Length: 147
Image (cartoon, rainbow, N blue to C red; front, side, top):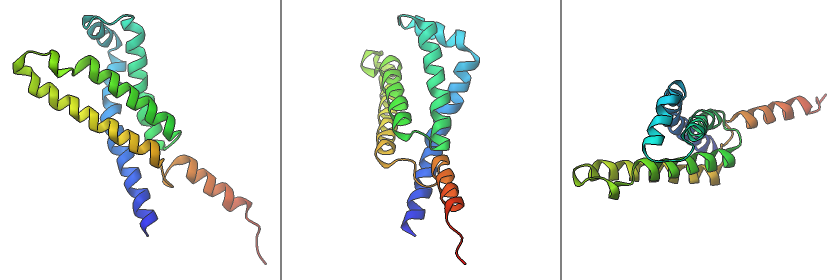
């Protein structure tokens, strides 16, 4: 019974994290030029390339989370993206005092998301994932029929 509960919790956690990233990624992908301009405005080199990579990570990563494929790679990709995005956009110590509290909240929210992704790195996707479902079906098909 505990395994089912753990697998359900892993699925819900994957869906919750994906719900954060996927809409943002689709929004950035649909306005790639605007996203690139915002990165250029922050002084980043190669803003067009970084915008494409960032939007791609925010779309491909959540899809991989939802399906439960390549959990370690997905966790590293999204954690890396989150750390970089946090340092670019939420370095609260660089903001005027009136904005620091709001940016600090965003900074630590992203730190918590990174922590959740590290848990995913260690725990894996569980049995409620596409690879495990396909593996279980393959084992069922290969099992000899008993007479």
